[in-house]
Amino acid sequence: MNYNKGVFPASIRFWLNKRFGEEGVSRISANLSLEARQMFDNPESKKWYPEYLVKEVYEAIDKEFGSAHPDVFKDYGSFNAERDAGGYLRYLMRFVTMQALLKRIGAFWKQYNRGATVEMGPVSTAEGKKDVVFSVHDYDLGAKGCIVLEEYFKVLCGKTGANDVQVAKNSCIHKGDGCCSWKLSWRD
Image 1 (cartoon, rainbow, N blue to C red):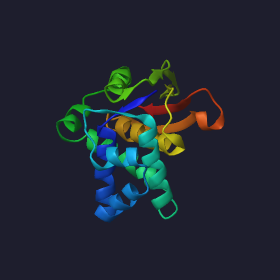
Image 2 (cartoon, rainbow, N blue to C red):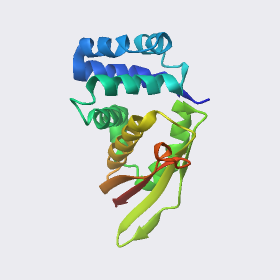
Image 3 (cartoon, rainbow, N blue to C red):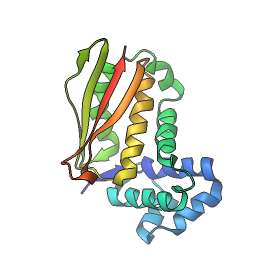
Image 4 (spheres, one colour):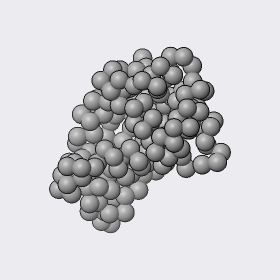
């Protein structure tokens, strides 16, 4: 079984409150199972929660807000990346190259996810453009979770000073593939 650090439900709740107010937070909470509601209503940032509980929160968000706000999960991924790269880290990110960030992704991932793994392929260069495929194994926050990850990495990688950052889905467990992967491309 996979686990997510308690910062996940805490950040989702914070974002929901910013975007949809306390009423939006309450609407999501009301649509959760007892176990997911306990995690969502009182998240402990250092506690590990089963992945399926965070997935349930995403499903409730999609049900409640998805049709009226089709980019709601992109919004959350972007919001979370901006928040994570804020403050002092924002200053440091200007000095980090894309290659250096990619080398640290695995260690960063392990701080917040337990059970699932992330893998980076080799970086290739053609016509001044670099690209790499990164994959996430044994991780399932649903199709909406994939959108969050994709947008998160796009925004975070853009903070390195890389230009023309693009992230495109390469494979998906929700389409029968063995893992979810994305092709990340950029220009230095």
